[in-house]
Image (cartoon, rainbow, N blue to C red; front, side, top):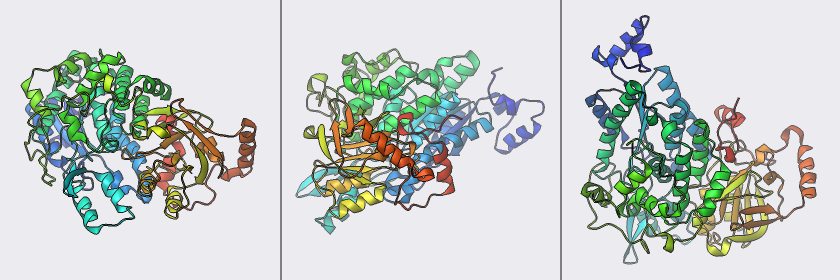
Length: 612
């Protein structure tokens, strides 16, 4: 008999009560011989990326039962960062990641579940589920709800693609045009699915393909397309197969820590850097690696960022390309195919399909495969009809984007840059590192010196921008917004968007111990570590200090001597119990957020909990 984890509650002599309760959920004698597989859903009516997932959970459960497993569905929470943006709700976004991971651990271990399918999509949900998978290390398959179609409007007699960032930017446009604003608002987010640019959600869902826990197409195949349905059915059948392989035949290669190994994390980071994905992915990969006891850190990312070319740019770093265009160009494995030429990828790693990365690239790259079904899958495109219904359309592009010179995915010879779209900077402001999305930085700003204007909250920074207090050549410092200092490490999309609306995004820099949305562009440097609340030197900067940024040299410094920094540190410590806390900020902090702050680490540790 298979030694399933669930045997503890379904076969023990003293488990009559447990079995009675299992029977009350619909199980029978035959079911007690089968693996119990959790369908971990994240359906919610609050988030467009998750509005359609109720049907998905039922679809996967049906397939699990058909293949000989027992499916039991439960839900995690989900917070929409776009809706939480610009007010106190953003304080809860990152902490929700830990809550999601914990809730999954509680349900899985509380019921001795054998395996799980994680149905994720948006910003903190995929990372939270990944952290839980690495922590629990039971057979797991990931499948996301898919990206939404890009919005389209007719502006000055031309059709233009738009997304959430366009809607946010239009809201801050000083040259108000009510008709245009209404048009953008009504069409920026036209369908169910995660927002259509390469923001955090889509970045993470693409990385799950490389980590090996999700199928090809997971990150790029549209939520509305009929082909997406096949991924969900495949998730149901695959989880039963690999669960039985593990428990019956001791095939440990299907466990998350075996699949998502250190080499797989390297591969995922290489893809992320090459795409110029969201800087949040660095935060989440670091956190997931710690959950799996994998030695993967900022230094590894720094080294990879120096060697990996930037071969792909999507919105918000490119006006023309969105996720639907990336999919048409072949998606993740076609980009990986180009990256094999760098010799950086660890192509021996395996995935839930029991294929090596090398085999998967050969099978799924549109330039190498001869499989008509795979080629047809990558021709799946947008229908252009506003809807919240999944699998509701079957439009296909007449041809694929195979242009590797000027197309969505480029060859190395035509790279946007020889180093990647993300970089790690170090210096006396960030001794443990910080992150910048170089794919969104103009070339003339790769080296930038300016005078500091210091704010101790995002709200204060926005006020200064709107009052015209930020000028060309300034470096806006927003501190005490880190994991502990916020608490919650808010995203700074609103300050960067305000700067863009004021036409200052290419004239200023923004530095914070908070983080940025995947929709952020410009010289925006986040994840300063240690953060201000952890006695980082960012807490010692004063108005007028000169900040020196050199992305090519990977450096970020305040132009002060070590002697002056030591003096300022002693002055700060004279504040006693109030040292390294905001002086003027008034912010109501709930008990739940205070509890999070007690154990939160700085961003270089993934903002995970301190080990206790």
